[in-house]
Amino acid sequence: MAVRILHAADFHLDSPYASLSEEKARERRREGRDLLMELAALANAEKCRVVLLSGDLFDSSASYFETQETLSKMLSEIKGEVFIAPGNHDYYSSRSPYAFMELPENVHIFRSPQPRYFDIPELGVRVWGAGFTSTVCDSVLSGFRAGKSDLIELMTLHADLNGGRYDPITEDDIAASGLSYLALGHVHTFSGIKKAGSTYYAYPGCPEGRGFDETGPKGVIIGSVGKNSADLSFVPLAKRQYEIRSVDLTGSTDALASVIASVGSGDPMNVVRIVLSGEFSGNIDCGAIERALEGRFYSLQVKDKTIPARGLWDGIDEESLKGLFLKRIKEGFESAKSDDEREKYLLAARYGVAALEDREGWRP
Image (cartoon, rainbow, N blue to C red; front, side, top):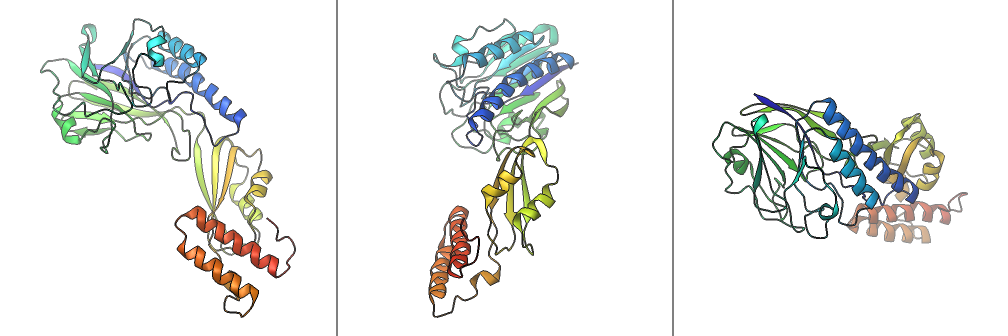
């Protein structure tokens, strides 16, 4: 006997999307609400009898009423039983969105950091869970043991395998739990389907990326879980992806032309950061490159991480204003403590030398 499940986490609804324009940030929040309805349709199409939502559905307690309404509608359209384990961003309290939402009878929220369970006798399933009640949580799984029964024992939990303040857990805890499947949230990248002892577990990651620390395909986990078995797969769901692309400017004399040749027609659905790398001694105007590529991507950032070709420091030993200038700039570059700081010194070297040599177009 097995049960079909859908496992999702870390929606972070109503995120600020600070790196995007105000207009695009609003659009991305609307797309997050649309994603909820797509997830409900997917759960029903896949005949999922249990839906496990492992926390951080909201980015904070300051969610829009429209978002709460959409989430309620999505939950009511799911034909299976839904279990929510609030996380550190959407922890349960008297002021959390969950306390005000009208939830259908098929939705169960774990309101306590102590493990509780719901039985679904007709499915032969017991679903455990626990929820954050503040921004931090002690280990829920430490010392936990599921009951010895013939039931399929599931658990939804917002927890951190890396330790720390957000419900730290270990693989030893998972192995000792006696669970059939542990549905985790908190980590925003799909972990793969893993196993500790006889317990299968996974992080689905977030269903939509929100920044350049959340690149690549995003989605949910769907499949079947038995008492001692699991047949689960990652299902991509994101409408847009965040991408980081590198363009090596070594040997180039024209940064813009090299970038255009590298990116081609672009991808208007995705949010992209182009990182300029390699050795390059010419002038780089990241803003001009972004404007030249406008429309090829949903949103574009260009970052200059090139290092100066040796020619940039030519003249550093001269007894001249240029030599003195280059000495000071190189000292700062070599002692800089961050990439951003080094980038400022490189720009100063390029523009400064060009200005001192009275070259045309030196102004940034």
